[in-house]
Image 1 (cartoon, one colour):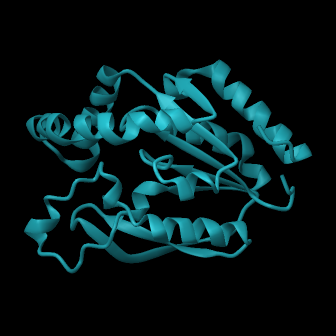
Image 2 (tube, rainbow, N blue to C red):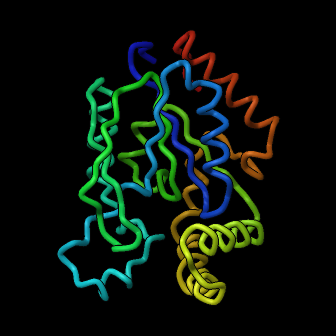
Length: 212
């Protein structure tokens, strides 16, 4: 690996698996080393051309919900040490916001999201691919708490969405991407041993340019 080229780490896993916890743990270790987090959730497609009622039908757990071409282009620019304008998604309006966030290139790029390992073009940009593997009962409880507390959802609506969309999409699209992972981390941010091993490996790559 070219030591001048940024290191790209992909962190995938189902909704509520603990991806964000793992991402934060790694980020906090390397933040002084120059690291940036790119969340796949920011790259949902713009739907401003659709009526609001149509937007409400969006399946956010399907690969086609994401503007993967834009995400790939942005990762490519960061790899070339160019700044990007990261989009922002408005979950209240179910479309992309007018706001953008300027992201400067860094030595470490963490790409986090449920389907970051689904597209081969995206996988090919990654130096390390992680899959956070957590039992379904824990994932639904975490999603339930998040959607009620942070997004104002009702218990019934979260459960209905989980059974009709989230669970089948996980089984069809997310779970199969586990086979592309270099490392599988059970129980997310609570797995101290796996995270310590991952941190050590990243340090080695950054220092010596040695790939997995």
